[in-house]
Image (cartoon, rainbow, N blue to C red; front, side):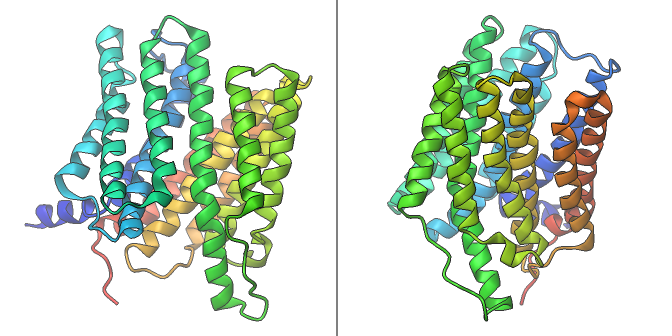
Length: 388
């Protein structure tokens, strides 16, 4: 009876299993990568190690977090029952199979990895499409378009495995900007909204109406899209570099309009602003690297992946789990440490050219952040919602 009740709770909302799976994979995947880099653990040689690592962080780790958030949020967007039960269990099982298959040697593992990965994105897209279309929720058709683009990129990736390294890396660049695009779209809604709500409750004397999505945001999205296309198709062209710098400026101004400094007292908010800030930093570093300083390319990539994606997944998961389980939106002391470790870890990873010790330290801070999340949030994610 207790097991049945636990399973019913766990699969009552997508954020519960997927945030646990994502955090667990964040620790295991990066630990494995660190051991591989140190020559302790051998990975399958069917693909270059950096390609396998890049794919699993973007389409695996980030993919699980995207599923957990979107399948939870869509119930609010559409006012329909949450995706739960067998459909949610099935999607989780497919995600797990894909993650395990990624490290099975020989062609059989490669086939299973590809099939499971594509089926996962197809299943997520189908569930989201059913919910959004059912109520003609046109505002979120953009989300559906991004999901379908990610699924198509997955199909292209596995269609070229393992023969065309250039095409595989193009798919990884595409996947990176599709995930950043999802962050820009969803973050552009929730970060200013969460900040506005907190200011009204905690600092009403200075609370002002933060700008909704408008012309400036549209222009910044268009510039970012232009840079994304350039970076994917023409990653070494000078024009792409200038677009990167322009996109960095536009995204920086967009973030400043959300006035995150006013909410510095609330870690559940400042972590979102800090996480988003890594996007313009990453764009700027990539732009400068293309224009003549190639040594900054790796830093630009990791500002977007470790910094933006890693920090925002941790921050959003911490907040969503509290809100959807009926708990107060106040950061635990342990999560303040976790957020600080993620920020420190990003800085350390950007300093990697100075020595391998910086990479090792950044791996440990990443793992520490997500281990703290698992210790603090596993009981919350497995427990029923608190009744007010």
